[in-house]
Figure 1 (cartoon, rainbow, N blue to C red):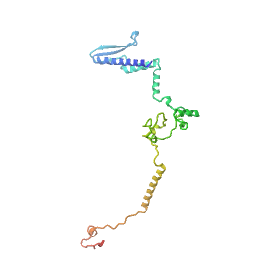
Figure 2: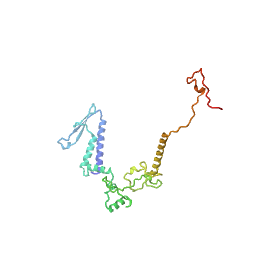
Figure 3: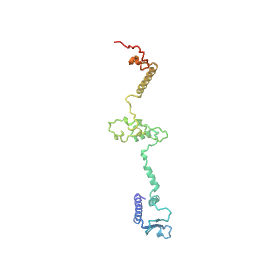
Figure 4: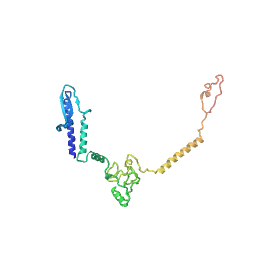
Length: 259
């Protein structure tokens, strides 16, 4: 069964379902609709379902020869699946397999087997637009990398922002092989750009400063040093009365300095 025949059959099923709902709507509340299944009749001309509309003043009541109500959507899908499975075409299972195949990458986009000979390495390098010196396959550790090239772990930050890239946002050209973990090295992820100062020099400066400060804290705690100060001076004879002195006996004046 081709696609056009399948489309016509599905359209007819939808039209029949719409016509059925239209009749129920027009005669709602003034009819009694009964579905009689005549498939068991001996008359070959009555091997189909008949629709008998009986007008009445009662509410719309549906009677069916089966115990469950009729679901037109389920009937249409059942007929569609049955036609696919019994048609001359590949059938419903083949349709599902085609949909499943279209959901993933094609065979040409998947990596090939791991190259074991120089000829296979040359073919793989040509496949990924690389030279033999640049091409190095990923390790064959059973994870399915195949002949995919092992690219350096460098982020897109390292690439020249002023170059006319085919894809400026990702800073890559058309046909250029992508890193296996490409999504980890884009400009919103890991940045492997070289720093102005190497890590060895930065670590020396950091740990040297922290060590010097710890040493100074230790020496300051072991050898405390205070600024020399004079004794505190108070007025009114060094607050004699305020400190509980006898008012009858006045103390001698304290002379702190002479002018």
